[in-house]
Length: 122
Image (cartoon, rainbow, N blue to C red):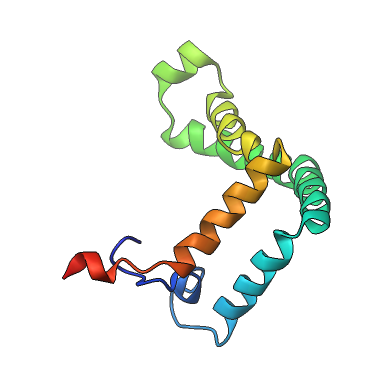
């Protein structure tokens, strides 16, 4: 991202094969709306609920299958069969643990979209 986006990270993000018109602009507007204080409270609650009801069970199944096929036997012995799920929980959990963390995480995407590093490349 450092030298590839030139301040337009949201214009190219989530668009692997071809560019969807206005998707970057819609993401930028969504991030701006999320960063409003009252919206951020609801977003954190919705994110936590969605993760608990849907994403955690589905990701648990997928990660368990992944660990059975590609996982490390040593890590399974040392950390238990749910070592990958524990890692994902410890990695993603702090993002929505407080409004401050969530706003800083979302603001990071806004920063990637706003700042160009082109002047450092020449």
